[in-house]
Length: 226
Ligand code: ADP
Ligand code: MG
Image 1 (cartoon, rainbow, N blue to C red):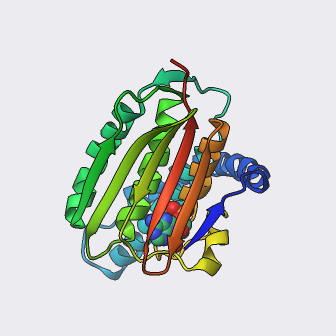
Image 2: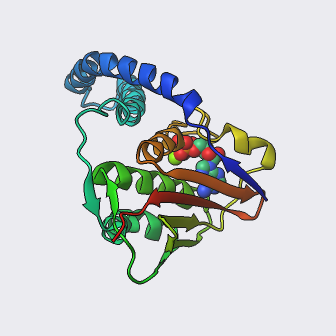
Image 3: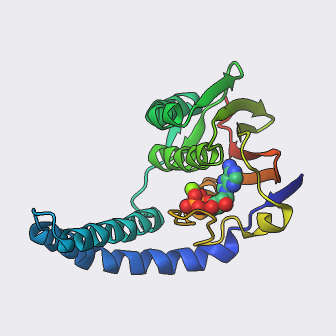
């Protein structure tokens, strides 16, 4: 098992540039998607197959842009004082269908009297979605995703532990690099975006993993003093 502290500084410039580019690509992409849809042949000829590939590839570009654009609106966000339990429960409800389909059992434990955190709720929920998606995807044969919420001195700690394939030690340093993915349909942006969001919240995201040992993602957020 090896511990990794993801460095967000080296990512921030890349992230900002990528977000700018993503924004520029979005309008022409929307036009392309619309016209491909309009021209999509109804009959079962060979062109139909080509159109389906075109639509799939356009969707993939859109997915990448959507993730990149998470970084694009840092000015328009509003911080509010939130109960992390509540946010987490909303995300669990959202992820439940996917978890059940993949035979993943989500277990959640909370400490009593957890303090609140100052956050942009949708951004924090985006991080939880990204991390939980990765955990579920790491357990193709099913398993348990254990989530724990604790109060640690001045921090609220949220821990996501899976029983998945794990991450080999030599690959740990690659996590959070833009476009690093080991998945056929991955974007390699989920962790970069997550790390950046946690960092702008004054928090910290750590990943502990080993090959065949499962993975734990630990998020620390500053607690609002009570
Ligand atoms: P994506 O999920 O699109 O590949 P991410 O940034 O979310 O992009 O993750 C990058 C890579 O980190 C994944 O492709 C995977 O190899 C590895 N990874 C992330 N979370 C886990 C996990 N819980 N278990 C195993 N590997 C993981
Ligand atoms: Mg992911």
